[in-house]
Image (tube, rainbow, N blue to C red):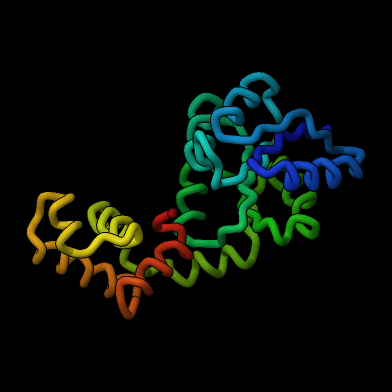
Length: 204
């Protein structure tokens, strides 16, 4: 019997997972959690064979929860279930120790097979996600400072305001913005924010 922990802040998603798993004789949903912190506690309590982890959650996000669980239990097998196919988001989750990455839209088709594959020691990433990673594999990544500037642009700050917040000159900010646009292949600041959100570089 493969024992499963489902982590998602939407009860509807957890219900859907429970129904799907309930139809299988070799799978059992043993616990649920609605945020990352609860996920760590439930993992400690139940030691599931497979954890299904959402990424965007209150209190502690999925990537941090994966890191916390894997830090304590290196053998933990975790599959990310999310609506986000952004390559940066995916890479972050896999680096934190996820063994699988599935989009919620393909749960009905792929979830059961992915649970069994990951339980058997394989890694699984849905094809849409793999394509996204391949597409940006050779892109130059943004530096920590550039990501910080992009976040502040997304919050509606002007170059002047960002310069004051970071205690740098406005010229420096302009230079960061120029680099951000070039690296993301963006036409302007708004386009850069859209790309940043889509790829999971920043979150609102």
